[in-house]
Amino acid sequence: MTKHSVDIFISGGGIAGLVAAAAFGRAGFSVLAVDPMPPAAHADAEGSDLRSTAYLQPARALLDRIGLWEALREHATPLDALRVIDTTGWPPVERASREFTPDELGPEPFGWNLPNWLTRKLLAERIAGLERVDLRLGVGFASLLQREREAVVTLTDGTRVIARLAVAADGRASPLREAAGIGVTTKRYGQKALAFSITHAVPHGNISTEIYNQGGAFTLVPLPDHDGMPASAVVWMNDGARALDLAGMDAEAFEAVMLERSCGVLGAMHLASPRRLWPIVTQTADALSAERVAVIAEAAHVLPPIGAQGLNTSLNDVAALVALAEEAPGAVGTPAMLDRFAKGRARDIKARATVIDLFNRVCRSGDAPVQALRLAGLKAVYDVAPVRRAVMRAGLGPG
Ligand SMILES: Cc1cc2nc3c(=O)[nH]c(=O)nc-3n(C[C@H](O)[C@H](O)[C@H](O)COP(=O)(O)OP(=O)(O)OC[C@H]3O[C@@H](n4cnc5c(N)ncnc54)[C@H](O)[C@@H]3O)c2cc1C
Image (cartoon, rainbow, N blue to C red):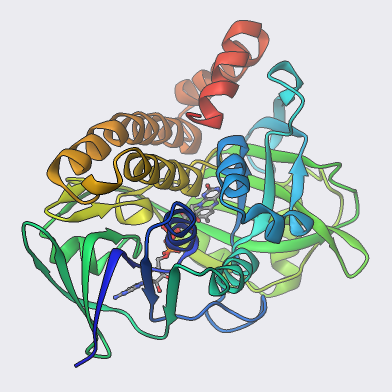
């Protein structure tokens, strides 16, 4: 049986796991990261992740610091403004529209949008060239033995890995988190999100648009032009049955409903990818650490896709964990380090999960009083300048 000794073992080579691998490698630690699913080679490949992620300023700063941003930069679309439109009824009638611009906070855009499948591919290519990082695709985590001084991991190909710290970055059903005996608390909403990309007649002008109506948000996030046409990534949240109906419609019928739902903000729209369905939940791990184990990213928290918080919160986990390791390299994986990580991250994760849960409940509601509250909330946040700036700053996250 092959045996390996490393500082850090990472289960999961999704975007969060890959960024963690690069960050630990750059900080001088030896890393072994594994994932049974290699990245998709192109957008239409089976199982490719058609979501996009708006990397907010702290996430971009982390990617820059660890040398990954240069691999992504040319594919990223800056988000120069966030437009929020509140609508009611069907077909949706606009009640209010507000545009948030980041220039009140500084010269940078709010964020930079990138398709997930492409990000994962580019990151895996970049990481393959890093000296201290051994990235193995096509092999997964199988079992865990926790000891006071090390985690002993067995992989699906029988390899045994001895690590000072094992990091669970293996997604919402995290096998490593489960093996460490950490449960989850899950809130379900009966909602699903459709994620896909489109081309449209009217240029997006690098503005991300969220349109609220009963059922949840309809979000358009700018992408680079596709086949010479302006393009955007769409996340469309709905009650489950409605989402399934929409996913099953033929393209022409779907595009007609989508045009109504978008209030025509980007003119005629055409599908440029398949539609993928995602269940909407808030899920938090009952603990962020166990002996020799740290739990990060969706293994630690799954949030409804509102305000680009999910993966950005995950990258804040990575930044916090690596900062602690750099501060005291000899203490990596010790209870003192893991306690500090768990305490430091728990508050931010809980705060974001609570706010997004509340926001989602208010946004999806069809009740007239709650809809009135949503409209009043948008106006209050936007029209009072200090509140507007505080909300924008909080949305961008710590850092
Ligand atoms: C519709 C939608 C839109 C979103 N938009 C945004 C956005 O704009 N901004 C944002 O910040 N967030 C967004 N999010 C959230 C974001 O997409 C997720 O947080 C992120 O993709 C999850 O990344 P991850 O690396 O934690 O998990 P995953 O991408 O799920 O990666 C986990 C990896 O673990 C691997 N794995 C599974 N089993 C094993 C095993 N046994 N051993 C090793 N590896 C294993 C899997 O193959 C997978 O590659 C959105 C979410 C949804 C649903």
